[in-house]
Image 1: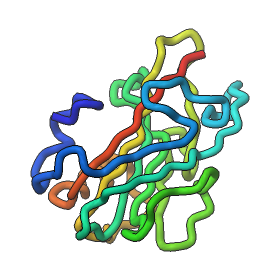
Image 2: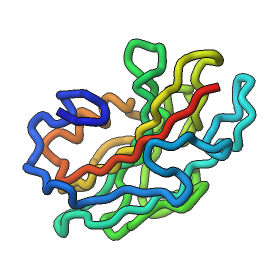
Image 3: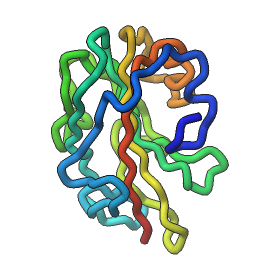
Length: 177
């Protein structure tokens, strides 16, 4: 079972993963911290800066062919959570994404439409007055590039990870208004 999302299906039919190898980090998002205004949406009454964070990673398996990065809010009151960001076909030689990278990719990376209906990154925006929400950034090291269009849903992306994930690393932060 995936310990962060409590979703037993994310580990179905995956190759054995090295334990504790790959690491995902962000200089200004510390594990279990509160997201700053930089990473809050600027739509529907929210006044954040809506900047995708600078993320770095290390210790990916040597046979990695590409990476997938997701940002997910499992606490969104939708019945199925909320996908804030999905990027796939990040080159295997990448060791991170710079701040504001969303919408600026040039090496074959593909971003999906998020659950707000917008292309790329959308920052945190839980319903006002709702409980604290978790925002989970997950990096997947894959054994291949994905031959998929950028018009797929996050669910289809997740389905296509089956059998290709060599390692994962996650970073979780919180936000409420």
